[in-house]
Image 1 (cartoon, rainbow, N blue to C red):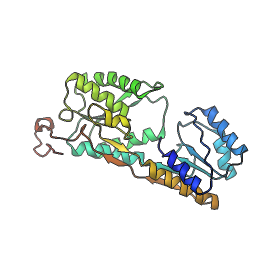
Image 2 (cartoon, rainbow, N blue to C red):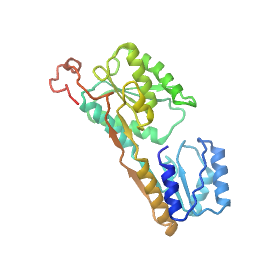
Image 3 (cartoon, rainbow, N blue to C red):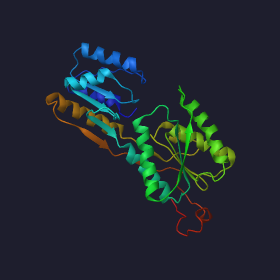
Image 4 (cartoon, rainbow, N blue to C red):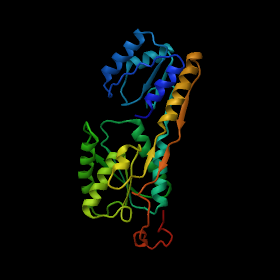
Amino acid sequence: MTVDIELLESLFWKKGYHLFIGYTKDDLKKEEGLIKAFLSRRVDGIIFIAGKEDKNKEIEKIIKRGYPFLTIGRFRNLKTDFITTDYYRGGYLLAEHLYQMGYRNLGVVFYENKISYLSTEERKRGFLEYAKEKDLVVKEYYLKREYHPSGEKLIKDSEILGEEILKSKNRPDGIFASNDEMAAGIIKSAIKLGIKIPDELGVVGFDNSLSSILSPIPITTIRQKREEVAKEAFETMIRKLENNKIKIERFIEPELIKRDSTTGVRPEILYRGNPRACLHR
């Protein structure tokens, strides 16, 4: 979740508004049904958390009607007022951090491309853009996309993929996983294979979830500022209720959280003789 729902509800309550909440898990029919239900209740405005890039005729109708509407996150092919974490910047910060810590042979681990989320694409794009600036080649690896009812299953699947990656010839020495659960799985595979972290391998994730702390080795990750997103969404919707003609496109800077999966002393031999590449915490 990219926003603190509890805080958002509290802010609207103090302002005299009730916040009706619906969860869809990216079910398009359920999204359409909830939007129709909210409109039938004559709600004052709608805040929508963007997910899969699917055509949603109900959202298009709201936009055409000029209804007070705000998305948390962006759509690729649908123009809306939005507030979002700057996912591109998050990916960029992670690549910059790995580079500064001396990692040069990089890899990214994401879901396969059949189902695409703009937030996921943006974090990868930011990472690859920084690598391009530094003339680094990045290997791309993909996890078969399945529904994971628990983080445990995702971690296990990522551990299996991690073993394949780390057993390969010319394996990466720095890996960016799309989220913390995938990063935790890769770390578990490295431990099983006897690969030292961060000496021989650096791993970064995204989201600053509980998995990033509970991982066998705490994970360097990106924290999305969920509280700030909630406050911005509240303030923006109040403004739109007063004047719906205002246009909002707001990117919120994420925060790099450094942990043991990348920080520490690394042997100079890994960096092809670069005497300045051995960095300390």
